Length: 244
Image 1 (cartoon, rainbow, N blue to C red):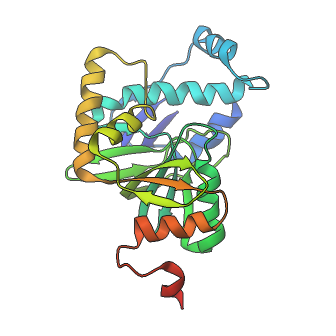
Image 2: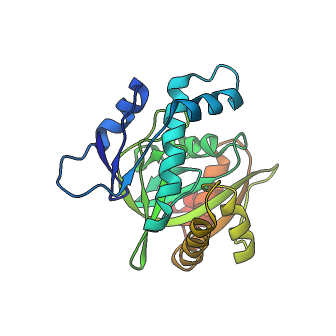
């Protein structure tokens, strides 16, 4: 089947229903040539399964394998994975990124609790960023970390937020060096030297095109209000005060 992911015509042939279901909203019927062809061999899938967590199904692992292949092959097209939960607010995307288990998905769900239908989640684990001219775009993918949230949307990127667990809620602006260190661990790995050079060039462009924050937060709804005030609301008016 042919899909359009981040404006890249992508060809793949999934065997399992999970990947087929997630891919269907991305189906492409046009006549553009294929940009990326994804392949997952039996041997590769078996090697991933040997390293997988207990109770991981081959069906879920197939989706992960396709995502790994796409994220490597998309790099030359100025497109990069940012392992994150992508939240859309007021027409802009905010990527909340963290190592697995830290609580990025927990945090974005607090936004749903706090702000209701003013926000929604575009992809809960594997969105990509496409650099298009002078604009950075957050693009949905059919690749999923298990939540089933993988919408076919493209939204201007407003900020990337690195989430850390803490006893108090706080937002700070990291240095460029810290951003590069953090984003490196949240993107595609196992790439060739040539692709790695292109990946670093993408990072440098992204630094000039987006805002970055570090959010230290608790796991209650107060964290969403702190994030809103420190990341989205640049007027100096607190969210609750603004609503009053």
